Image (tube, rainbow, N blue to C red):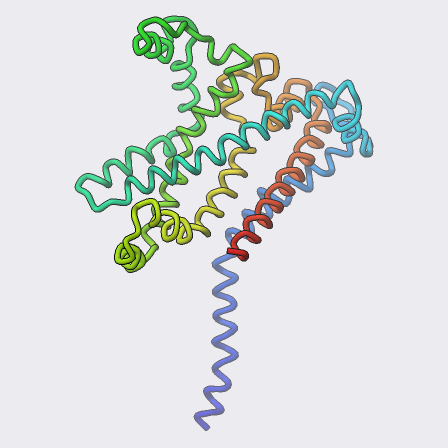
Length: 311
């Protein structure tokens, strides 16, 4: 009798666990559908329509003409490929540099010293500030002429040997200036993630390495980095996705200039929709960009997974 009762209770317990699991993932699933899936489907539909904000005419079928113009037409493709090149260059610099800087900070702050929480908070603080605020502050720092804060510091340090630069007005330095600001603002987030990964590595591994007379570099290479492998993969993938979302800095600091040196795909999509009033073409740009970023992320995940399996 007891066995029969227990057997009857097991399916009910499993159903309660299943319902509890669905209840916990329901808010995230609803948010994913409302704010990711539905907007993407709407953008996909709008990309096949001729939709303009400056005319009262209803949307009309346009097929794949927007995609053809963006990718093939000489009158339109140049802007898209320039913006995509800037995005790729930004990501190619920010992802490795920011990850390396965050790893260095995490190693420095992973020490049992007095006052260390204060330093951790100090380095994480830029992440808490809104990007719009950070961009405005750095725009003041990059002010051209001798009155600019950065120019004044360089003039003082170099005893006048380094002339004043127009950091945001020169096509050669505008994107680099945004890259430096973005690395400074975002390194704290990666640092916290890597710091949590460092604290998850067993101290016994370092003790064993010390008994084998391994120096600091050898411990970093054979204990720390292998222990952080999965964390580094996660950080690299998240940083890549965030790097391709570049918009706020460009909109506030340069407005896509000078000479399209800082124009990104997201900035081009926004200006196409609200300045050129062409919602259909802007939607096609976002769909293409989503596919490109998804492909890069999948390739990156595949390569990192293969390296993890081989090692």
